[in-house]
Length: 213
Image (tube, rainbow, N blue to C red; front, side, top):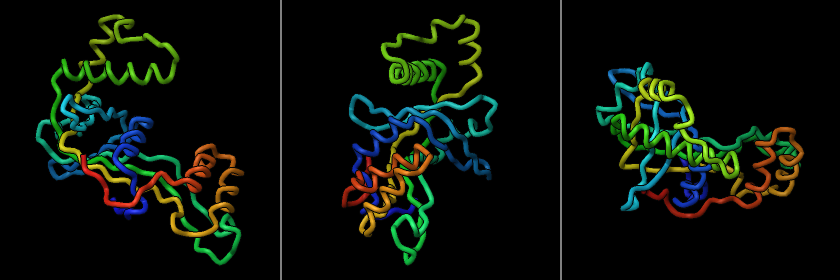
């Protein structure tokens, strides 16, 4: 992913963004083909502080054949985005542009066995349940055993190791017209576009290179 220093987030902010979204598009190259798959992802760290991603796809997904090969893979996590017409800058002499937020995670595949896949699924569900439903205690154990076991048999888990993270939060940094742009964004009917209003006024980006985990 192409980025610039002033579009890049520090590593803690990238990690927070990915964990908040918990969803991205996984891409890899295997046996002469490019495979992509949108899927939930869980960015976590080992006891030693090394970041990794845990995830899974349907066993019928041809991408699963790449998991045991150590193939390289990339996950793209997208945030809010919008086209920006010249008028939103309060002038007709600006070039229209596109604002967007993205974090890219690259690494190598490691195949998960059945026990690890189940543990990773349970950890992901537990985190997302508690975020979605206050005080939730729901677990896979509440599903009849034959259904949960059937579900787990039909998925293949992976972990992405040796991660490299990049980010590009293109928010009109180092250009004028921020107040006018923010007002236009707030007036939009799309909540994702309105989310960008505060981001252009206070970009979460930092100077410096893209950190490596």
